[in-house]
Image 1: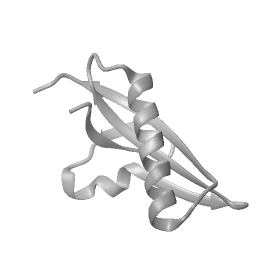
Image 2: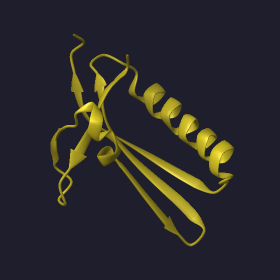
Image 3: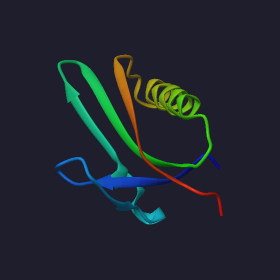
Image 4: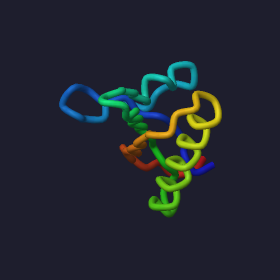
Length: 88
């Protein structure tokens, strides 16, 4: 697996900790401003992965899902890689 977890950050943008599986929604922030939906995803990835591929895959997946499920066209996805972990 490339993404090993979601991260929660404090108000100053500092990573507090990796979220347990039952609290993953805390690692996603959604805002709607002026007709644009912005989705910020805070992830922790496996060490050694191609980060630009991870960002591209997550971005396209989120945009696709929001278009299919909610019929949203104007979506901005921002992926924040908050840390890296070694594979277990």
